[in-house]
Image: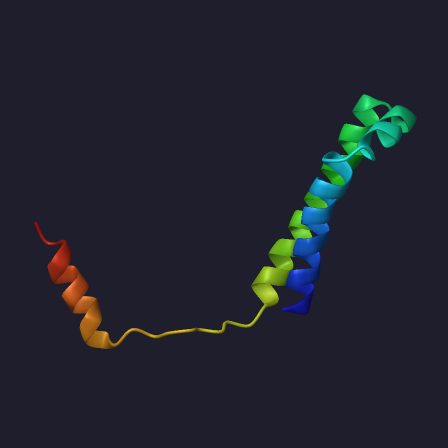
Amino acid sequence: MTALIVTALIWVGLHIGLAGTRLRDPVARRLGDQGFRALFSVLSLAAIFVLARSYAAAPYRGLWVAPDWLRWLLVLAMLP
């Protein structure tokens, strides 16, 4: 669960901290526009990959389990 939270913060930080601030301009100037886009894309895809793996590895913590009878009540409620 910690890896999931850390990776999500990295992904958000990458988008807000790098793409959404003035930090983007010097990096884009140094790498060129295409270079910046390539680097940003690679970093974003890597973060999404790690985020997906962290999500898959995170334990399930159910907050509430519906009783069995509620399932049939919902089915009846959806009938026309």
